[in-house]
Image (cartoon, rainbow, N blue to C red):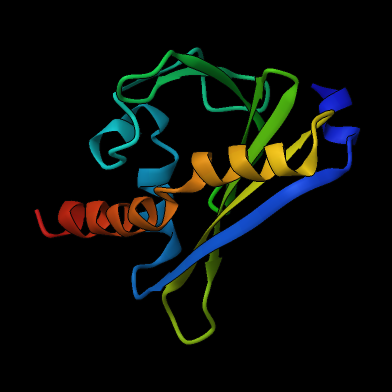
Length: 151
């Protein structure tokens, strides 16, 4: 894992959404990794292999695809959760970050980075495929928090 982190960043992209929802309410839903399946249409099943902590792995199955194993690479409770997936010589890192806004509300950002010993075009192709649904995922995360609050 450390070797992949040291490789130069070959491709990255940020997806952000600003909402009136406070960061703690968002964190309560985001930090429930096994609950992602309830609001992320890109996940058919997910299982966390221990407590939410750096080094804990989880297994996620996208619809119609093979199961992938990811590792919690960084965790800042209430603020951010970063996972790393090693796949075919690539390190795919997704940071899920919550930034409180000065006037209230929160900016939710998903940042995807792809590193590895492949041509830049391959890294971009993989990164684009991995993150294609991130705008919808951000919208669904906010909707899940609002639905939970309205109950």
